[in-house]
Length: 228
Image (cartoon, rainbow, N blue to C red; front, side, top):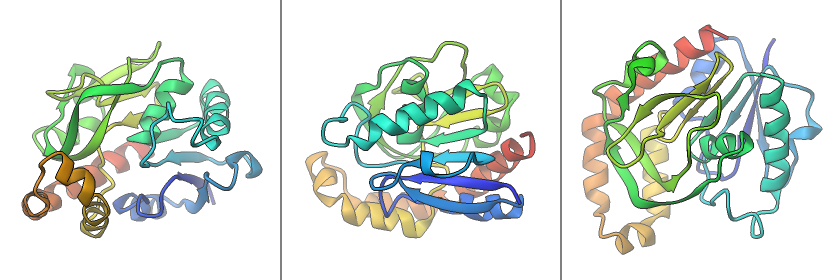
């Protein structure tokens, strides 16, 4: 049975709807809390999924585990091994490929459409076209050398990119479920208040957009996994 090793940075940031998709494709799903355990300690998995977190890639002094995680991803990507990154995971992939992750000019929180590029429309990203996707980030990066931009948003040009068929990175959160979103809202009340974002507005948007987002996300994940 193929193994999907999931690099986790935060308890409330997990696979969400992606877990059932992975299991449906025959994967044995194994989590690693990278804040306390190195992924190097595990045999070479068939797939690595790098999840989100509440730290920035540039906060290595406060989060020294990021240094080893980046080294692990550099080696894996150099070997063209299947890798999927979501939000912080996408940022880690970008930095592992030589880009610098930095604070952006604006915060993206809530449901917003991302626009697939021409290449994106010819990829699994086509499933999210016209569907509001959940965002919760304020960091950005340049497009890594050799990568193909697959989607952008009104605020950021690199919402998704790919390296061949083996690596996919997305800034938005296609894995999100209703329970996860509620946990994030509850845990982020201070941040939302500072940004003058009303939690109940986010909840209403989730009710309106969540089902379509999950359907599009499952289709996107399934097509990408099927091509590995």
